[in-house]
Amino acid sequence: MGQLSRILIWMATPALIYFGLQYLRPSAVAAMLALLLVLRHRKVAHTFLAGVQRFEVGVLIALLTLMLGTIVTDSERLLRLYPVAVNLGMALVFGLTLARPPSMIERFARLQEPDLPEQGVRYTRQVTAAWVVFLLVNGAIALYTAVLSSREVWALYNGLIAYGLMGAMFAGEWLVRRWVRGPSP
Image 1 (tube, one colour):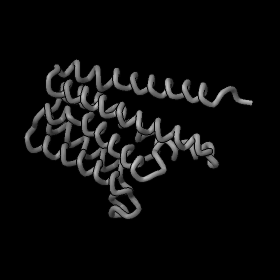
Image 2: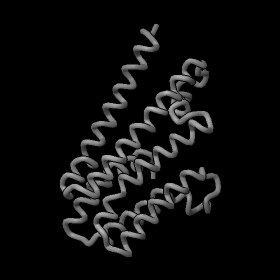
Image 3: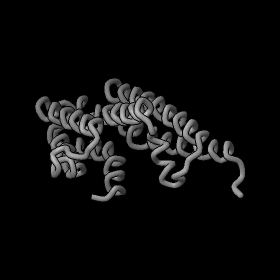
Image 4: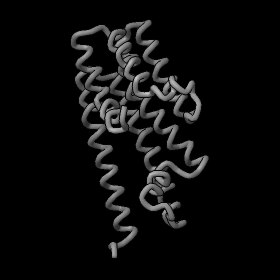
């Protein structure tokens, strides 16, 4: 499964949960999500964790545990915690790269600019830290919608608004980066 299809499945997960709950029990939706997780991470299954970062494995195990808990309890609220777990997992992954450089954003930046100057390294650390804060706040809002909101409000925030906010974060960072770097030659 290609990177684009993985991203599309990840982005569609709240919609899959919302529409799945219209017709199926939470346990059935959780079973389908667990299957999608396993299919998305076939590499983990095929290599028995060889060559996969420990924190990625930790996030995968946490998500599968959440789905298993939902299968056992048939709890819709537990199922709706999926975006919370994804946001916290991503915040953890990004945060760990701040403790063990290169930072996540530096890794992305070096794909386009392998000889990133020290100023760029500092900037990418700041952007990575901003993403950690964003993901934690987004996770907190996802938690609020999962526990205290209707299914419709949960789906609206986690399936649409959260992605709009991520897009705004990307666009804002792009504008700041253009301003910091100055005009291109």
